[in-house]
Each structure stands twice: as C-alpha cells, then as structure tokens.
Image (cartoon, rainbow, N blue to C red; front, top):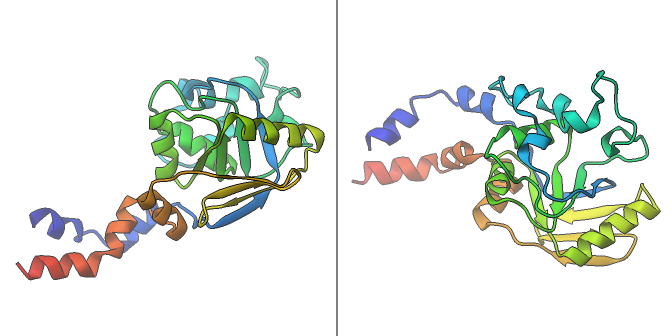
Length: 214
C-alpha cells in the first residue's frame, strides 16, 4: 500500500514528460533494407555515444560506423544514406539486436524515424527494449523476409502494410501476408501509446478502489 500511495504523489505532468510513445495501429510505408545478419547493439549505436541519458538525439548516430567514413563524411554505399530508400520500416537480416542489452539501441532506431523493424529473428533483450520504447519488432519467416528484400531490390518504393490490430504484415507488391506474434500486454500498450507507467496510470481508479476497499 505504501508503494501505491508514494507512486501517485508524482504529478501527472512528470510522467507525461517521459512518455514519448506514439500510438501504433497501422503503417503503410516503403522500407529501408539492411540485409546483414547478426547486427549487434554496438553496431546499432556504438558505445562511445551512450553518455546521454535522454532518449533524444541518438538517431544521429544510428549505425554510425557504417553510415560514415573515418573522415566523417557519409558513406554513399550504406542504405540509410541512399536517397532511393525511405520509409518508417527497417528490414534487417537474421538475428538483429544481439550483443549487449543497451536500451540506447532501441532509442536510436526510434529516434531516427523507424516505427517497425522486420527480421527473421530478434535477440530477446533487444526485442523487449524496442517494445518498451514504441517500436514494433515484426518477426517473420526466412522466406517472407527474402520476399521483402527481393521486392525492395526490384522497386525501392515497394510498399508494405503492417497492421498491429490484426498482427499481420503484407508485402503489397507480391500480395503475400504473414501473421506475426506479439505479447498481448505489449500490443495493448502500443495501440494506446502507453509505456508501463502510463498503463498503471490508466488503472488509477481501479488501484485506488482496491486499496480503499481493504
């Protein structure tokens, strides 16, 4: 009971300041391909850029050592620097997000502008981190992933539809669809734009009612 009372001593404005999650329902977008397997969190955001504690600004250094040459100039051969690729969907190779458990990797992907990451396998800790930070990790079969890469290679503007409510991703150009799994609690949080604190606040009346009924 003491925890509950202490928790609600904080003003709602405090929690609103740290909530940066946008509601997620359906996205129809082109995609950026990253056909590289075993991308770890140090490649997603190098350790030297982890000094900040706020979520903002990490997108500038997403894939820093791949996006930029040693002299600081953009690497034109890297997909994120190629103007023919755009969209809010990142399509990555197998085993994306392995390595250390740094939450900053999720912050960097989100801050860059991506809202969906597609792969045939995600590291468990990374998958949890992105779900906690407003990103949707969509795990698909190897065949479906290959079809996405082929569609993008054929047409960089190829469109994909991600529907969280129905838990489906559709390759529009190939007319193929895949049903993905997601934790029901995390699904609800994404649909409503909640982090864990927001979810608790949404139950404030029920919590107070339970406490006062004791």
